[in-house]
Amino acid sequence: MSLHGMMAITLGVPDIAAVTPFYREFGLGGDGNAFCSTAGGQQLTLVQRPWRQLVDVTLGADSPDDFERIKAAAAKQDIEVAENHGAITVVEPTLRLPIHVAVMPRVAPVPVQPAPINVPGNTGRPNERPATLFEGGPAQPRRLGHVAVGTPDIEATSQFLQTVLGFRLSDRVDGVVEFVRCSTDHHNFALAAAPVPFLHHSSWQLDSMDAIGHGATHLLKGDPDRHAWGLGRHFLGSNLFWYFRDPAGNFAEYFSDIDQIVDDAEWMARTWEPDKALYIWGHPTPDALAPTDIGEIIEAMAAAP
Image (cartoon, rainbow, N blue to C red):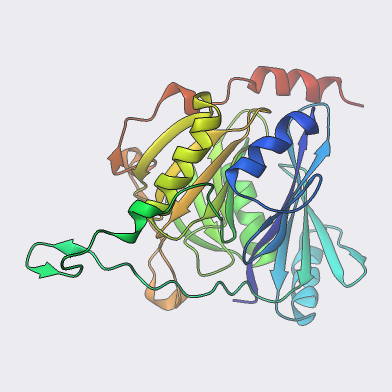
């Protein structure tokens, strides 16, 4: 696979000052309206827009040779490709989303040593309390993993990502959601059926379930209303999750333990029934996970020049 991951996103929000504290307490570093993960560097930028929106995404490539492949695939569909300072940009037509592809080094997090645990028949931590009891504070997201977006045409968006950019299909629920990847993660885009394009959530990797729990506890101490859904485990992707709502209405997810597809030939993309679309254990999907501003986004888009 020539692309190697989602490297950065730009979010448009009506009030940057209102949203900035959320992502700081979420655990991202950086200054001003730019936010960094510990391994991925600057991966989130906030800009002012009249309604909340995913302004653009940046994908990492290993070589400029990937540009030629993408340009050739785009030309077959009469899609324009812009070139600028060592990167190229294509616009996904259904979402009208600019997607930048740049030659960038792969994100290489420092390996994590699994914590010893006590399980039936195997005492991995004899005579000791777990170190996680003495940890806490804000999370430290390792990297950006994926975004989930609403699209009026799942098939068209998925086919663009696959045929033009070289994504692979990982799993799907017919007419509900498709998961596609450009890295070893199970998905870098989750595409959900929606009447209008919008960002549902961005997702950020933590080390473990305990890291998710500590991060969530810290974040919710600041404002319990930030909670949206969690803790739980998805079926598609298998990852542990906890979702929070930022002040603009975007969701941000902590994730850990996502499926890793290191050999495309060994993974079978499947079509699943709707009961597998969201989770395998955890609290039932709450109303709070559904965006409440879709009508406002539709009106704002209609009024935009």
